[in-house]
Length: 172
Image 1 (cartoon, rainbow, N blue to C red):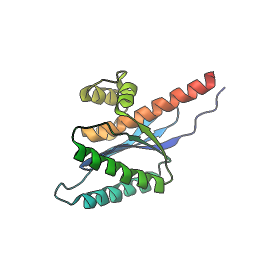
Image 2: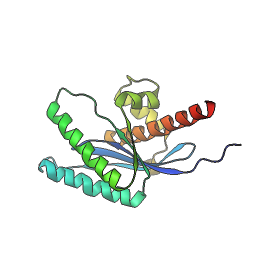
Image 3: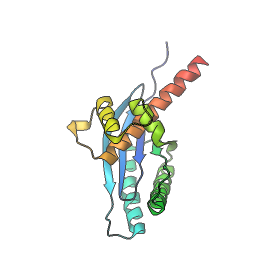
């Protein structure tokens, strides 16, 4: 008989500098969503004030939930290099907050996330949203915006990848 898996608290992040999606979940043998939301910055603020806002709000979330693991979406290449640069910088800010909180960090690319959540690496946003809503119970029937849903999808991916790794280790 296998021992019951230890419950872990996971924070998952869909990075951005305009809107940053986040989700908190617990992971034992399954992923359970605790809460999710979005940090939105003021478009009129200078970029460093926006990053500072992300640090402040994300630090509050981390202090409240005490995650031990973090899952974050990697960047995809974009034609808009200035946007890609800002999102990359935002990821750096987020990673710093997570490292300061002693979180183990895991990264997943968009294709891995779509594959884990929908079964297809080329799924569209609507398919991801539908499958997320089927796989997790939203707290208090909360309606989430797309950035928060994407963060939940990152959490589901982390849970799925971890389960597969454990099964593979047992079979080896």
